Each structure stands twice: as structure tokens, then as C-alpha cells.
Image (cartoon, rainbow, N blue to C red):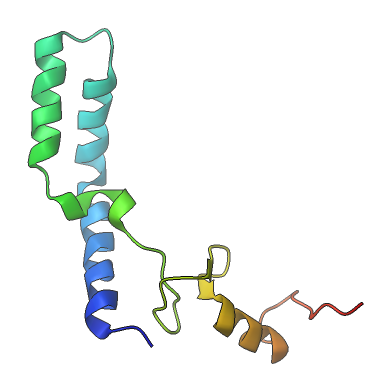
Length: 101
């Protein structure tokens, strides 16, 4: 199990990313617009820098839903490799079959 504080910090980042997503996208569109004036683009980039760092989607870490483990995760299942193997062996993941050759 991961530290509870790490998991909670990541949840907070997810909430902030969702909260500021529209504002961040709007400012990014202005800052990346080549047709806008340089002053307008610079002002948008300054406003973007004023937003909280944790509101950026890139700062959200993919963690296992069961254990909170941050490494070795499968995006499709939102599980770490250990729990994925365990649940697959128990037959709790639909369509997943243990390979044998």
C-alpha cells in the first residue's frame, strides 16, 4: 500500500485539474494563437503561470485504484501489475485469460 498522504495529494491534483481545465485550455489557446498580438499572447502566458501548479493535468500521477501504487500500472484497468495478475487469476477481470503455451 502506498502512503495515504501520497494518494490524497494525487486526488487533490485530480480535482484541481478538473476545476481549472476550462480556464487553462482557454489561456493556452490564446497563448498558442499565432494570429493574436504578442502582448495578448504574453498576457495569457502570465495568467497561465499564475494558476496553481497542481491544476496542470500533467501533474496527476496514474495510481492503482486498489493499492495506490504509482509504478507498473495498466491504464486500461487502472490497476498495478500485481493486482491485475491477482484479479486475473481469480477470474474477476472479464475477458482476461491467463496465457499458456
